[in-house]
Image 1 (cartoon, rainbow, N blue to C red):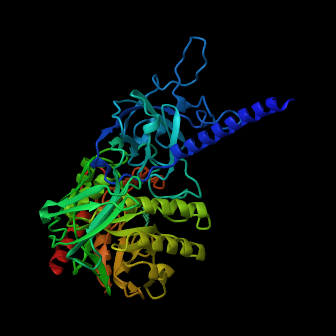
Image 2: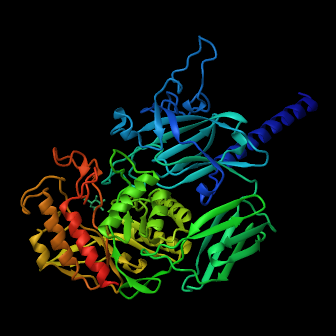
Length: 613
Ligand code: GCU
């Protein structure tokens, strides 16, 4: 073969190599998750909520061929249509059923009530692209393993069921008609976060808002504005653009403080700032939020931010320097008055109004980050928040991928809500078994949380052990990595009797504030009888009376979040006629009816409020 021919072949193969390399890099670039756009609801966006067609795919037949090789083409993500009557296509979104999104599929289609596997979702949408804009596709949360395709091209994937994620889809969007397809798989896995067992329903699907934001080519990607740690009269913060543009002018304005500052970004497209100011501090009694405007030549972002300090001093929790008792209640992200996940502002107002009616100034949002509206509503209504990642029970402590998954969820929780003054506690775990691997895993998480945010308290729900002579001992190596020692206890329900509460003693050898992150017992609303009969409202009422009297003896007690505000679905609760797949420890039934124990808590908090005036 002459040299010219060899040269031609090598030139062609070189061109092919370069082409493949470019394709791989652009695929990777496209799939690289875009950093979370802060305060997405303040951006220019169109909602993609509404009717999405869906296809149930238990064998992932829309993703793998019959040899279990992922389809490069001809997967369901292509949303193909027949081009001629002889064509073989064995799926069709247009003639498939449609589901209102956001929602969990379990409550929307009885075929999916206990389904765990893949469901495909497809939404058609129109975009009139503006030159120079970036288009970011945002998901409030999708449970659990999600692959996202726009116009048949993969734009990325996400693992985790309770934190937001977004992708820049500018380069794959058409002018006019587009479609987005999601492959959502809610199967549980031993190495996932949470792992395979938990006491809540494994709701699958697109469970929170879907938005398409239209952003300027250079936009404010992220920012933080809060009181400087340990300085009540200094507002500090930073902001970062979506790329390293130096010299970009940014104006930060807080009209309520007569504060207006002109900033210029540095080399990394970032700028930090701090200003003397004397804001009225946010408290549950007076949840003062300030209008904040962040303006560049291309956009103006509005936010509402509160200013407060939270710290511990010995066994006290101090809010704005004053001891505070956290009058709380635990809440699952479960919808009131209907089946399924809570996701809307209306759901948030209902649940949080019930907490306020009980006399709460604090809520424990269990066992995963709730939707952003719930946190923002808590802030507006004057409720401090414990926000938690689902490192729950028997996690795969030795698996580095599991740790990375937990760390990602912790990062995304803090990233989304770092400007929400209502959040006072980041929680990294719930009821995890002792052991060296678990201690290492949680210590690293705790240190990572602190490195991201040293202004809030860190905690986790620990467990007490029963010792002789009615002693309950808290012994947990993690005590030095938390600011508040919190633990769950179920005396009178899972162990001992309600009467035994009167004999119980507590051994908590840590000079830190104590929060009882869970206690309680079940009752079927409307089932009345004697206080000796399990499942009656009277049993639950007496359990609360005796538990509160017992817990009040703990000197370092700084807060409570009884388990739980409202009955919620769980696959672990099978007692016919009483549970029927519901955990009945709610103080309120699914249908909003207060049980007798609700009023015990309400009375207790009225007294606590007086005590801390
Ligand atoms: C545990 C756990 C909760 C669970 C509760 C119960 O403490 O943290 O998630 O629902 O007990 O058994 O009802």
